[in-house]
Length: 413
Image (tube, rainbow, N blue to C red; front, side, top):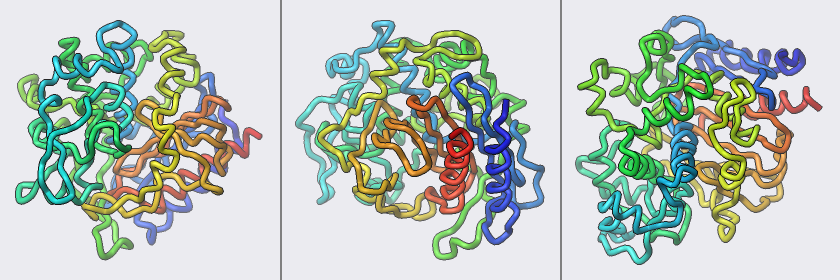
């Protein structure tokens, strides 16, 4: 049963942005659920694109980009439960991925040196293995040129060319770590990552519209991609899709060439994605289908802070190495008083209650086209806001994420 107070507040807030042409935001979808998996508030606002496109609906499909990381990590943790993978066994990682044994570290002076520490699956899932992203890391961006790196090309060869940017275990840096974790899973099990996710997560949860290869029905509902170009952020326009290879792959042969990116490969309806979060709210069991996809102790392990010695890891600042892809930001999630920050297995933890009303140890993460999810196990609330706007860190979308999340907690209290 929808909470009418939350629903009215969310609807009014979203419509105020999509209904104002000066914002350049064509459309947004927001959905929040309770521990039973029931919608507290859900609204599709505006249109799927700026160029007189159809309205947004709750069936609109988004490329969810790095929101995929949670799914890939859950897949890896299922394999850990089954004894097929180990979190802290570097030799297993090297046996499966000899490339990771040989990978070099890119120094600030542009030279490659040997790595001093081993890489484990846990490091890959916690972004401490040493990899970066070319759109956040100028050193990596420049090293890749003149050809350049493009992790949104669905091509495993780009991934294989990338060196580490830090010594393993030395620091936290966001990067292609979970793409590598997906490769570890595939080589250990002989199952392609998306196939595993469909069989072991989506089918038990009864979800048909979360997929690395959008179905024909999903493609009909695909939202348009938008771009604010550097230099004139007030102007927003439709652009080519950022991640088009899986959309264009029709035949099995075409699909075989597409890399199953655990870091950014999935498309989804937000109302279905939040049902994955509902299972996590219930310690790994769906409140709807009653199927268990993870054991409670595994979910608890995912929520353990993996970087206790780095309480300010997300306050290092985000450089706009590729300004058409990301805005600069002083930190990922500002909180009053600067409490210690945590990172679980694939997501950030706001360890202290947030200004919106979220509880302790709330997990959250994002996708580069300005999508944001959160999962609050303390208060039994989870949700997502979705858009398709580049670059990352769009103030209008982030403002709505905060406003709508706060509206949900306010209505519940």
